[in-house]
Image 1 (cartoon, one colour):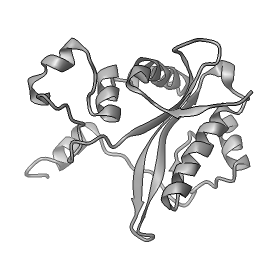
Image 2 (tube, helix red, strand yellow; image 1 turned 90 degrees about the vertical axis):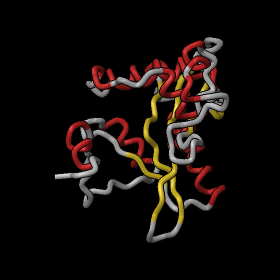
Image 3 (cartoon, one colour; image 1 turned 120 degrees about the vertical axis):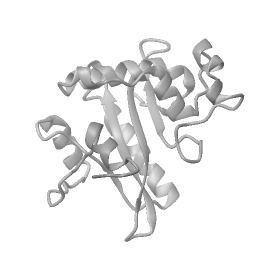
Length: 189
């Protein structure tokens, strides 16, 4: 079977959102998904939703924009159609650009890769990864990176077979919620 990866389109957003929820369940964090289809639509396509709520939101005006400093979308996605069901998706990769100050070049950061269980082991994930690697090659980006949960050994094995190496010497830090709000306030204490 040939696996065809394509860029996501606005009509894919509902299915992509469903897969985000499925991924959160798999990662044992279903209550942490607060993103909506509208959030995803705005991030990927600058808010080109045709929903009534979107059309009536006065702050978006006549030209909807993404929630970025430039107003342009900064998140991208590729999908694979479900070969058995019209309009359904088998998998997706959501990604954005990062930047290496040492190399002076962009790279691709894979935020989420998800293949529905019935399609795993058939090359769908590898096809998505290969597509993003091709984005790097085509644009002279110098790296392709992502995080993986330590307990997700099937994914880790796949990534190692593809030639990826863990960055064990780095520790990931995250700030959100109240600490982020405090540090981002005009008078951080």
